[in-house]
Picture (cartoon, rainbow, N blue to C red):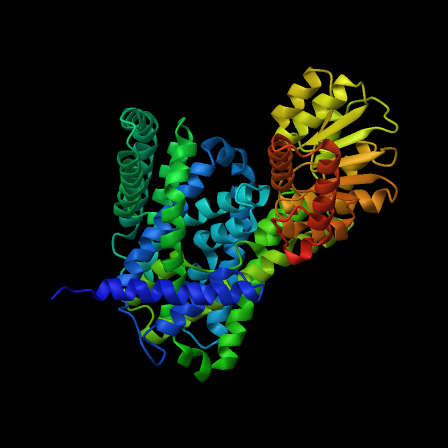
Length: 575
């Protein structure tokens, strides 16, 4: 008879995860919380049916690899290099700070020195998997806070190598420690260098040869082999599967096949990453929380509060935009898969016992569940931080070099200069309408100024930058950036500075419309909806509908869409 055990486990895991995810979505909670609850329900520590606790975690590892690989494809080496200074400085502040909190937490709950030091290491590392899932759900995977957050995550991940190498000290075996640490670091460095050098040269060549076959199956198989092969190579060198997969994605991002690779890998990413969160729920031991609620609460508050505080402070000190800084910092306020690796190694080495390992796992789950709430309030907290008198906006330093020197009155301000803004800017140029562009990309600003366009380098949410752009005299502000955090900050700041300026803000999704209106937007534009309306006009015109009737129908539908944004109303009825 066929062994269908793993099929049964997967069917149950996906089925319960779907139900729990739907309930979480109905309650307006992130679906990943539903997935974790599903894992608790089918885990070995709760009554009722439980799945095999060996099979699901193995599939979950695939989810980690595909999730990080897809993220790497969306990023690039250039983007990581752009944030290296901020990421390294933030890591130098955040990691020692959170490690100190971890040690204090260990002492407060009665752990010994060795166990507390291990807990310090666990606290110092955040979960890149949780962070990318949150960003994907919010449509912010390529936002500034994502770039800074992942820059910090790469540093944290690399720090896992010396942490693991130093564990023998806590185990009481420090003989040849320097040699062990040196070998680990050298091996990791050599493998990373080989992966990058060979990958940059070999991967595009392989993808081109496979793409010429015009076989989607072969292309997908090649992509999966590259992702998992690189992840495995890094794992064998003492690095993590996640870092290896992320590195493979970065290599692919430099080729002309990045868009197709991403389209092929996304279904696998979404499918298997669900199992990662289900497997986390399966690890929870409710008895740990029930038996020692006070100690657990103290440790949880120190973990979540301390990581949020040090994470935000670390990025604020680097003098990036306060809203982006707090958002990036709050993204790191949890522990996850890398902390599990460190804690597991400590368990194997006898540094902690099974109960303490379960305690760490339970702390991790609580911090992961709290993460979506922290990320949601981060922009508001960042806006408050930005109002503090001692917070200096770094863009002020760059204004002298980037100011246009042209007096502007009754002009248009364009925030961001992507594809949407280029269309708007071109139309204004052709009509001779005075306008100024604000953009955070120095190369874009330099190019615009070279063409004679008034352009300022800086964050559009900065009062100083808006002041230099002439917000008090502007007639219209067009916020074209697709990122909600940046768009909200720019809209709020502009409205605070000029109650009469007409603000048109871009929404990423329909649910952001009401938020942006609350922030002060006069009008909100959702590009996908507007594109749908244009398709509708073209089709109905071909069907003989008059231009006058089309104007009435589309105006009515547009009003219904933007007036009922809170209801998430997508009606197919144009009438």
